[in-house]
Length: 449
Image (tube, rainbow, N blue to C red; front, side, top):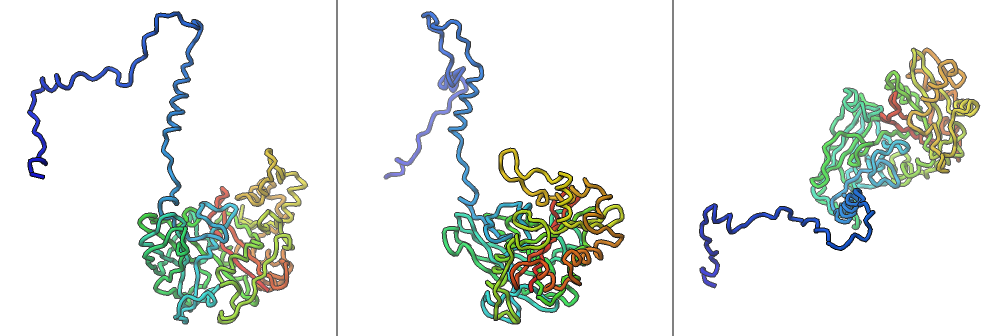
């Protein structure tokens, strides 16, 4: 073709008057007008139009024409570090009733081993003075690959790190390290999940406890996360507030430390996780409980909820006690005594809701036991447990030992007193809630015989 064939025609420059003449006038009603009533008689002269029908028709049209918005995970990456196992799909918040600080995706291996990731070398309980390689299992549950995934980890002092105290200097987040994953495939492919090692390794100082909280986060440009590090609010965050004690170890020092971190007016509840210990320990221990250097593993045995000898069955777990400080006194109320008194006083609520479904046990509701205790009043608290002038940090461990009828809190003795099959592992959860009953954080302790 010649250049002339590509030349656009030049239109003459018109005056404003000529432009107005050629354009013509805009119609007064571009969508039409109501037609003129015909001359023939109205077949129903008493008919009165419904002024609301037009709005109804507009609603139909809007519903038909509304564009369907797909779920985010069907068009974009959907990153996840699990807060619990099995079944976590990224829904947040989790608590109540599911705890959110027992991530099965934060894994440790002693740094003395320099080989590739080996699940048979996983460490359940870090020790002060040792160094550990940190591995994180990361998931992409979206239908689009995640490119440029950034994984990071932090260590935080032992306690109840969570919503409300994330800016407390005690819970300062100490950055451990990070790693990049070039790409995570979409959820239809097996490589939508991977285990990545962060660098540098985590060194637990001699002045630390080894009970520190570990927090990890995951982010990518198409599924960005920039904080805060609150696991019950963001699926991009995983938290490991957990310690597994050897049978000969004592829980006394750890429980005393945790009790001392309960602010005045806040409530600490102790529950038993029952069979939830099985998937947790299988994930963190490589399918079994490491023995010695971790090359050999013992079989994991957990009790059913009905096998727990103390406390109150509240569904998926057993409620053991409620502790707090009020009016200069420390109260440690046993759940079994509280339930009996509430039943006698008809304060426990009905077991069945109006729609026929089973109600959530009052003790499983956020702050449920504390509200019941406040309703009963201080005069009745001594009948439900122990009331003393000691601070909670000193009173709690002794109250737990007396509830279990044991001396001290050696892991083996605690496990045997709780019941279950021989050699069972017991998952104990300490949950801290605000005066309004909102979750602050939690810490889990596993004891076994």
